Image (cartoon, rainbow, N blue to C red):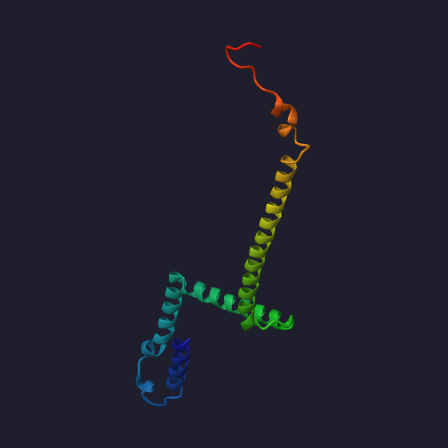
Length: 140
């Protein structure tokens, strides 16, 4: 853009016969336009133009996001802080749930053990405990 502005000023000075550019040859007056064309060619070829366009698009997207958060009543600067607090709360809640589940599992195991060791348990019946296996090599 700077090359174009300089070129236009030089052309005006040449046409109005004002100052030093009035005595310059036309190729020197028009050279900023050639430099501008070379600059644009290089900018497109190197990917600079596309990169700047992408950065503008990202800036617009971020600004739109900020406006939407403000419209919802959420301070965009505090949003990341709130997000961290929410993650911290979720981690704390997970820990509490794990503790409660551990207690419940211990209670279930206690009930299971009490049922297995109760009088109604067939593995500890008095019939099995009173029976004596036959002695080896002895009389029956």
